[in-house]
Image (tube, rainbow, N blue to C red; front, side):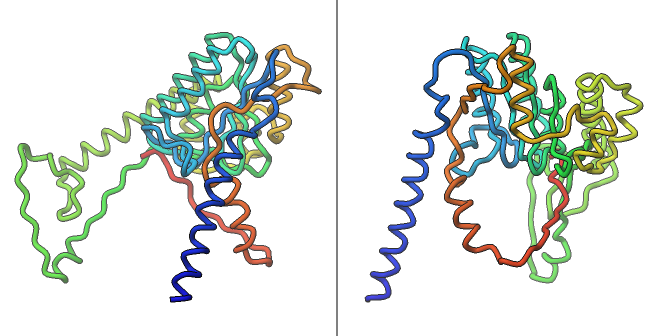
Length: 300
């Protein structure tokens, strides 16, 4: 009984801490949130870029939440320029397109946009960054991964071993394309490949126009490989090497503001777990140094 009571108290304390972090973090924010006068807007795109409103609680790059913040910046007469802080491995093509179009409309409203790459800004996140006026990356940022991928999983062998049988009723021969209980037919493989090729062609065109590069040159780089920020800078995929501070200074200069004393206002709520998660991970992280690398999540 005492163990259950203690566990309940600990769980309650954790929930209360999460609520306080979310409420106080969003209320406090940068001092510039309530400041008047000319400002630089800071919009964060973190996690997988996906359709729908998936910001806030898990810190994902929900397209609806992000485009709403971009529209807010376009409509705010005090905001002279915007910094997009990207920490994302990419996401879906359609969501990346929606955010990118909102970036284009923001620039058309006369607001310069600077993309600032954090740990990673790859695949769909680079699709978004390529629409900015200027891209700033850390030398060790991971970017690139210009490409498209569709994956299917086949579980027929496992189903046979477990004695699982499926029966499918469908309106057409391709309605269950990608189903795990059968291999795709040659015709379906061609359909999937055609989808990949079409979105890939769109991706290459977007990068070529955004970076003012020949499409043939982009295709040489667009084989799915990733680059460090420094490599991307040497290849013309990035304009400047630097951190978030440098990106803010660049945005201030583009917006006609004092680069030494810009007022930065963060648009949108911070992810629910952003502060608490960092504190918790610092407690759980081993003290010895280690490096974790993983392939980027490409366009899906």
